[in-house]
Structures are given as C-alpha cells and as structure tokens.
Amino acid sequence: MKRKDFIKQLGAGAAVFCAGGLAACTKDVIPPVNFEVDLSNPASSLNTVGASKLVNGVLLIHYKQDEYLAFLPACTHAGTAVKYDGVNDKLVCPNHGAEFNMDGAVTKGPAKLDLPRCRAELKTPSEKRTLLVAS
View 1 (cartoon, rainbow, N blue to C red):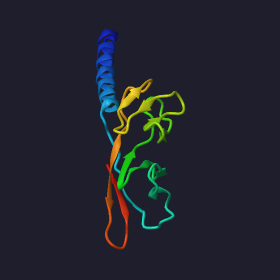
View 2 (view 1 turned 120 degrees about the horizontal axis):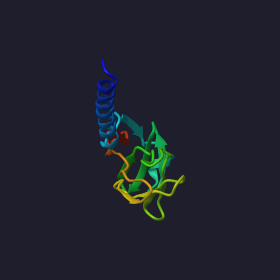
View 3 (view 1 turned 90 degrees about the horizontal axis):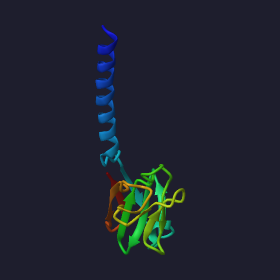
C-alpha cells in the first residue's frame, strides 16, 4: 500500500470514529436506573419538602408536596456533582458555576447540555410510602 493511500484510509477511519464518538456524547443517554426508596419512616430526610439526597448515584429532590424530582447529578460541563439550591429553585455546579432549572435545562454556562432526568413516581399504598425511580 502506498503511503498516500494509507493516510487516506487512516483519515477516513478517524473521521468515522470521531463522528460516532461525537454522536454518542451529544445524545441524551441515561444509564439504566431502577430502584425504590422507602419513605414510610417519618424520620426519612426525603419526607421534608425542599430536602435532597443522593441515592444510588441519583440526586433525589422532594420538590413540592407529594412531588419528587430525580436527576443524574454529574454536571454536563466537567462532571462535578450538582447541588440543589432550594432557596433559588435551581441546581448549581459548585465547580464552575453552571446552573440548571428544575427541568434540568441549562440556564447558565459553562455547561451546554441539560442534566439527564429520571422518573420519580410516588406510590402510597396504605402500609408503605415508596418512591420509584427509573430512567
């Protein structure tokens, strides 16, 4: 194989690899999440509106009465775990100051991609209050 042909093939392969890698990075991919949180204990920290807690790698927020939100907390800029700011009703990255609204949408950079959100569904059978979290 001639040097020129080798470089062409190498360049084409690199372009295909980069395009595939780039597409994977820009998709809103949520890794599988599926667990339950027992809220039946009155002392559970998530029973208080405004409380937040990291459970199984997911940031859970007791947002409003009987309404919970769940996010994958890694900031989409550099991966630092975001924190819930209940006073200002937003998620904030303590590392570079990126901010996200309660839908996970970026409201202040440097992050450009929204935070992945998981489903958080409250189940309240008579004997046990449970939060189901899933992607």
